[in-house]
Image 1 (cartoon, rainbow, N blue to C red):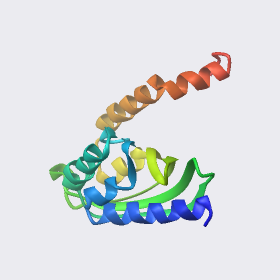
Image 2 (cartoon, one colour):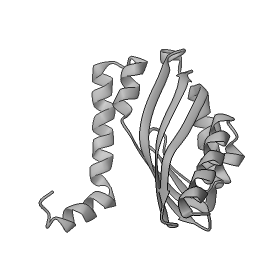
Image 3 (cartoon, rainbow, N blue to C red):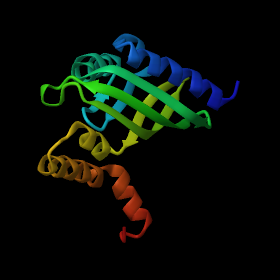
Length: 165
C-alpha cells in the first residue's frame, strides 16, 4: 500500500466520523498531541479538544454535514488533499441556509495518524452563501488576514525572500 493510499483510507475514516458527529472517532485519526487548525474555531490540541471542537462547536452550528476528500497525495510524512464539504447552518441568524465550500488540506503525519492539520478554505464564499453583511465580512476577513500575517510561516517565508515579501 502506498503512502497516498494509506492517507486516503485515513481521510475516509476522518470524514465519516465528522459526518456522524463522532468526536471520539474523529479525534482517533489524530496523534495524542495532534493539532487541528480550524479557520473558524481556531486551534485545538489533543484528542479531547479535537473531539470537543467537532461535537461542541461545529456540530452545534451545523447539521447535515458532508465532507469528501479527493486526489490525496502523500510522501509518508506530509499529505495533501482537495475537499468539498457542505452543511446546513443552525446558527439562529443563518438557520436553514446551506453552504458548500471547497478547500485544500495539509496533513503532517506521524505513525499513520494526523499530527497537524491545516486547511485553506475561502471563508468568504461561505459567508456570502450565509448572507453575512458586508461590514461583518470585512471584519472577519481582516481578522483572518492579521492571523495569517502574524504566523511563524509568514515570517519564515519573508525571511526566505530577504524580507521583501
